[in-house]
Image (tube, rainbow, N blue to C red; front, side):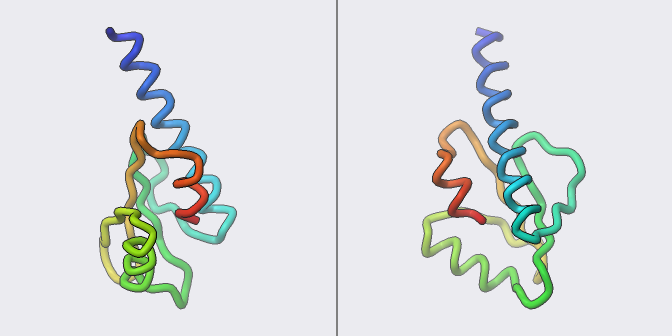
Length: 88
């Protein structure tokens, strides 16, 4: 019911917040100031979206290339804690 949906949504948002904090700590720039499940990430100087996309594919992680210096990622109810760590 509605309470179950709210609980799922809260868990998804918490995962996105954890990922956001981990990315900030690793030197990435979050370009969106608010989010539910999707983060837009500005890459540090010297890192390209293409190189990160290749690394992500090798780890079976789906990213979306926004431009040469920006990627986006969404989390959902299937995203595990290990996934959050391997993304950073």
